[in-house]
Length: 126
Length: 358
Length: 124
Image 1 (cartoon, rainbow over the protein chains, first blue to last red):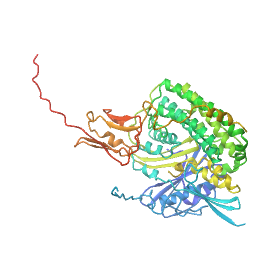
Image 2 (image 1 turned 135 degrees about the horizontal axis):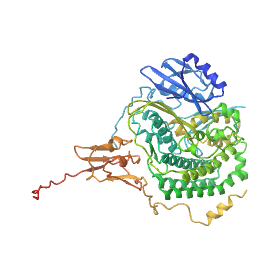
Image 3 (image 1 turned 30 degrees about the vertical axis):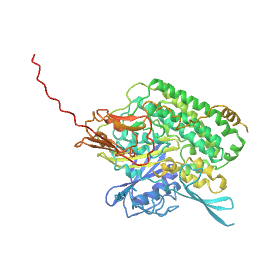
Image 4 (image 1 turned 90 degrees about the vertical axis):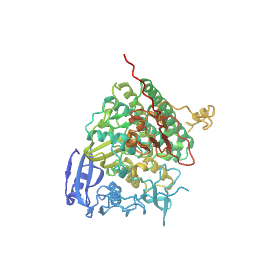
């Protein structure tokens, strides 16, 4: 269904990203999906001449993944986003927002990972 | 030299949407800039997991008001590819007509904001008066001014009759004629050129490394326009991307004004070639699998990733909007410029923060 | 330097581009989506399709009590309920809802129809 989807290991991630950068590919984005109680999978999308190449890693939520923002600077915003919304751990980013890019202090923790239980309070109209 | 930090706050008269920048300055020159977003985060990606896939069209349209039709178009195209639905030809041409009307109104809005950004309020009012004609024709053909809700999975929801199609071309011509009078002020006026020429230069190498999109990339010489891949009915229309090479604010204004004329031409071509037929096909069954769909919004290329597992609810919907990719270019352009140029630089990336944060 | 002067002179000597709303209102276009002004409750069969399809969860249909209610302040005026209704009895008006001081619900209840006595059949 997805064109050119290749599954790789987490150790190959940096080498593959370097190869893409040297062949002139543009970094489009990365997508994180919750698979189950403990597993997420992260897909990296690259583009050249309107053709996409996708690389997927499947990890446990507690593994630390290396950041690609040293190679592609524009990856830092989306990596900060998956830290907040999914609870994934990323080390070595160019700018680290420490959990305050999108969510405030009163927001639910990791809302898109299974969690995000929202309590609804009904207050009397004044 | 001592450094001061000036907050370019979330509320500012030139910003259309809240964006916070911490500017580290030495005297009047900026040394470093750190952005902070998060003032309009609504959690829409999580909301789409709780609504059925047919109702998601309405959620996705409301991500942004200025590019709302193209958001719904990307979603519907992705779902149609996943469920192998063939959209009738007339619906594809109608989608092109409404999408190009949206592009015209977005660029006219931007021209007005840039004029307001350097203080030229009467020019801002002229651009927005021109834009009212487009809003009225959208209400007449599709039902409302801003969020027109024209798309559905399998086609479009309304048809445009022959008389209304003629009226669409008449209105598009009037808009182009009015813009021809105003563009002289943007391109030849001495004070306007002083604010735009040479400000915020982005070289071609920088634009490639930072993955700039849309008019930002096209003004620096990169030929990147997703409409040339031929989705909807663009494959049957004749056009070429508008490219400039200077890479400063003046070049980006030039690109956007020329794109308005290109959109008027595309609308006239589409109205001349539109075939008769149905406007939508019924949708049966549930989606299964994963798909990526990309469209060209007024600000650049947007990517939609959808994964479904055979039930009525989608497992994951991921939206990557063009402003999300253009913000790092802002961080590259700001150091080295003057404080008075900061509003111009922020406005030239055409920031749509509600798209960025969803 | 003086490109704007033409526009300025034209604007000085022509009528304003704005309308003095609320004293002067524009006639609405046909098929414009303004508000859900109500329902022809006698035609409604209480199938509940509009309740299931509404993306904003603004409509509640109660088959047992024969009532149809809409929360007009949750409604996003998308028009999906008018499209899926099998009897086409939901009314979409072209003008927008004016502002109100309090949120209210719009409830319609179908009256019970009077029972008709069956006459004798005509014998051919």
